[in-house]
Image 1 (cartoon, one colour):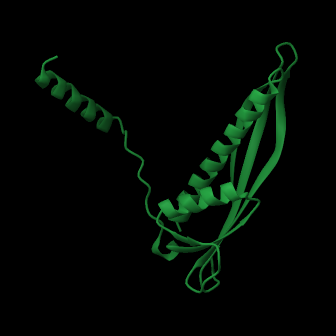
Image 2: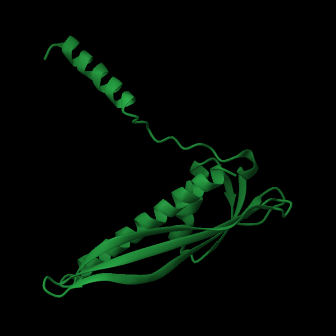
Image 3: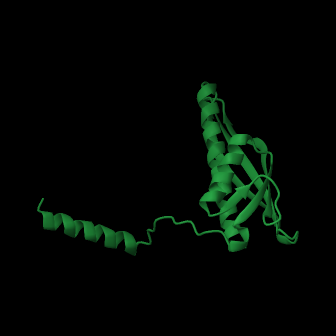
Length: 163
């Protein structure tokens, strides 16, 4: 293919992607007031806590796990709603289950005033389990739960950006 045709196709592709609304995901920084955060978590295991802390840091926050006079207090509680069986198909050995995770959060300024009252974020997904392959079903469920938690953390960041 001639070099000029390749370049022409490349520019055409770039123009088409720009025209269709495609944009690279760019995270807006957190407001200045949230640049130093004291993170208080409940219902988190160490891996989840580190994932949230890293996500907050990528958004521009200096995150500490100890209180300090110049840090806002971000209280976050992660909880699981009991899985709900939606459909059971005895004929093919599959079950559809709804998996739900919730994240409650509030923010208090370093002076103690309430910056964001307690709010709840919820994510859910329906998962098809194979009753004949429990190991695979368990691994699929774990992956869905991890995705739900990542989505909740992203929602939290977007909510904090709007404070």
